[in-house]
Length: 451
Image (cartoon, rainbow, N blue to C red; front, side):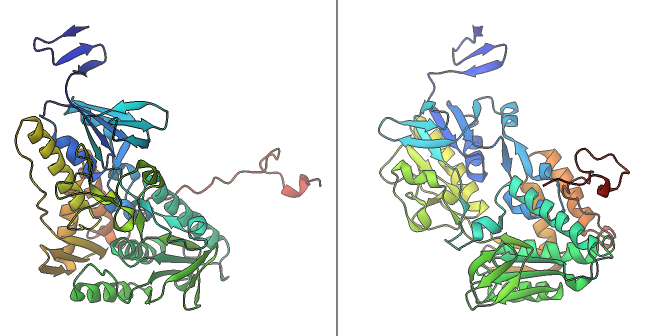
């Protein structure tokens, strides 16, 4: 083992090791906010520990494409340890944060390891909120991680194969999407197009009416964060694609085979997708940090946790004076700004409050149908909005391989002339095998079971 002339790092067979005398920045969460913070500190004289419960970053805005067979899971995930190829001052730790001691400036991980910090950045995101709805957690599918998206896709194709094996019965496929925000609209639109273009030729045994897609929304309109014109357009496009809308009624209970609404309506459902509501993870309750609306950690204009000058929170888990929405851009801009402020403080320069720039928000309904609200003023629909959505989402992915494969996947799903006969990425349907102990080709009757 040797050291460089300045003594700022040592080298070993495993590569460079950060100088332990440098200020230690611990970033919890490898999502939009966490990665933005880490990258902003690339040239700062610090050593960074990035902690995440998963070994990859997930591009959540495209998870619904994985759930509906449009993209592979690898297209929207990025191996966090690959960060070290460009940024050697980062150590990536696959662990789970369970405790924060702000007085001692240490954190405790699930494996009981304690790590000290000079600056702590909490960017650990949120999880699904079930709002206490009976049966929701047990019978509905959330879509906040790669594994959850794959589970939806697997269940979808298992159910399709079951329906195809019993043609001419009422055993169809009924999907209910709970939530009329961007995620709910995008899931429902993708499922409707998958049904009409990709699955009708593949499953001639299933009558078209037997595959239904329904959105349930407590509010009276879809996409409440968009302008009225865009809400109306989205509702019209979904109806055009055969999506049923149940607006103005909440969910009272989720059963294994139905969704019960607050007005007493019962909607049969073989697959219920929960696309509404988020809440901080349970462990945040034990950290002793100030909480605001929705259980989010309260921060000031510089994203410092109130009362804790060395602790920051960014992204969905944080709420500041401006109460920014839980979207990608506030997380990215907040994470980058925190990183820049930490670097400035270490250099003896003044820190500054975050000046959030609202670039707008988008939602795609289907091929050549999307809505975009830019800079809170400009409203775009139809094909132009779809092209803008495609460009923004592809370019926001991490890594050239992900951008290339995602672009190819989306073009093959929506582009001309591929959209006429798209081939979905099939879910994992269980293999058909004879019962244990039965030889292939032998009638099952030859192997009676005993009580």
